[in-house]
Every structure is written in structure tokens, then in C-alpha cells.
Image (tube, rainbow, N blue to C red; front, side, top):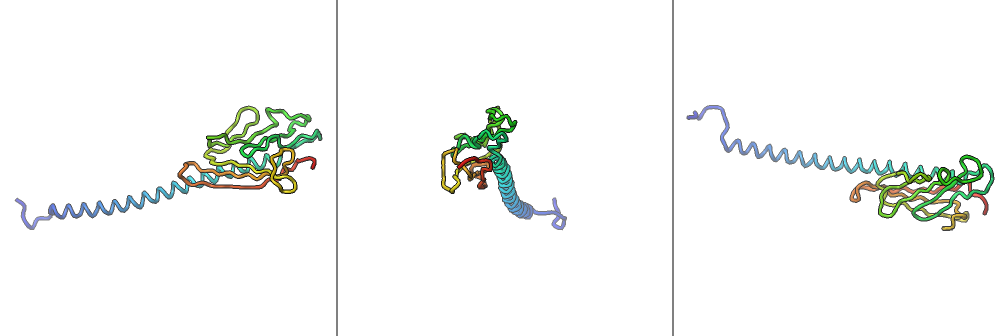
Length: 184
């Protein structure tokens, strides 16, 4: 049938070449899988950093502006000082009265949720997703920790963000001075 000198491969040669190609592909796919996992982890970390940064900047900015009172009516900058929420108030329309629907803002992370929210009276809107922890510590003018909203002079904000519970997380922290605080 076949002449011994004809060009071609034997079954044994074909099986060996298929095995070698299979091993090379398996190695290539293992490296590719590792690279994709590393890329996914890095992308998740970048997303967490971005969400944490945006949330921290938003809360810090509004804390600094809290208590704006051009009429001198004595509006307290912080109405509620809890470890998981803060309620700020300012007289933005300059009428001497704080309107609960536009001039009072609450930042909170509800128990069991992973969404940091900002509520300005029209419903709590999401600020950051994947928040694992939102913790506030309040300090008076002497630097002592306080829970009395009328004595708060500075606030430490701690936010931990991470999309997947098993994935990477980012912890950001800052201290914010309440600029418009009145009295002692």
C-alpha cells in the first residue's frame, strides 16, 4: 500500500507532536490565566481607589462647608454626630433658617449595605458602591474625642472600599476641620 519512502508521518510521530503541542498550549493558557487574574485584581483595585477617593473628597468638602451662616443666626454645622453617619447643615439661601430638604445633608452607610449615601432631604443618593466600612470620629477643640454634635471641631473620616468581598480593598482616611463652628 504505502511505500516506505513516501513522505508522511507515522501514528506514533503524530501522537508525539500532538502531545507536545498540547503541553505548549497548556503552559500558554496557564500564563494567560494568571495574567488575566492579575489584570482583574489591578482593575478592581483601581476602581476601589477611585470610589474611595471620590467619596472621601465629597464628605470632606461638605464637612468643611458645614455651618455656613451669613445671617449670624447661630446655625450649628453638625446636627447628628454618630460613628456611622453625620448630618450637616448650612444656610445656603441666606434666610437664617435651615431647610431640611436642601440645607441639611446626611452621609450614611446603612447596616448590611455596601453603598455610601448622601441624603439631602429628597432620598438617599449613592455616592460610592462597594463600601465595606464608613467610620467617623469626632474631636472637640482640645483634640479629645466627643459625641456631642455641638462640640465638634474636627472629624476623622475612615472609608474602606472594595468591590468583591474577597478582592482587594482600599482604606482612605482624612481629618477635616469644621470651619464654620461657632462658640467654645
